[in-house]
Image 1 (tube, rainbow, N blue to C red):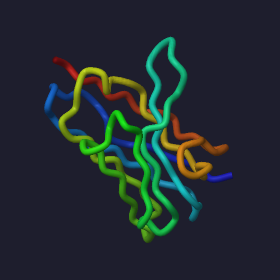
Image 2 (cartoon, rainbow, N blue to C red):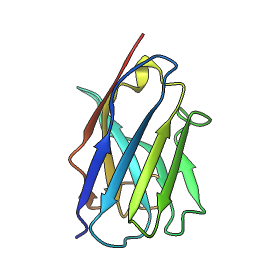
Image 3 (spheres, one colour):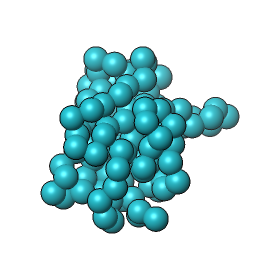
Image 4 (cartoon, one colour):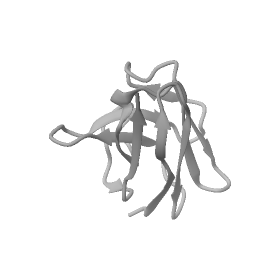
Length: 117
């Protein structure tokens, strides 16, 4: 089972930007980001295929978030622009996702993103 380690996150103001990173222990298939707020189920944010040429996004983040990956470093990124308070959540890396939006078996530890208005 692939091990996933996340970094990034933190505090941003509305309209600001943050970048998350997730490094895998070995090559894996599709990867993705999910997020969760207290009392709610974990929800899909974005996914990226093995080669990095295919991506999928939740409607709530389309046009604001960009997912990418560096195959050589086994690292996936989530660039989050124009952040809004409703983006506040714990963000989790996941692999291999069941394309295009369902989570697979491996999760990262989660990283907190807080957006102030």
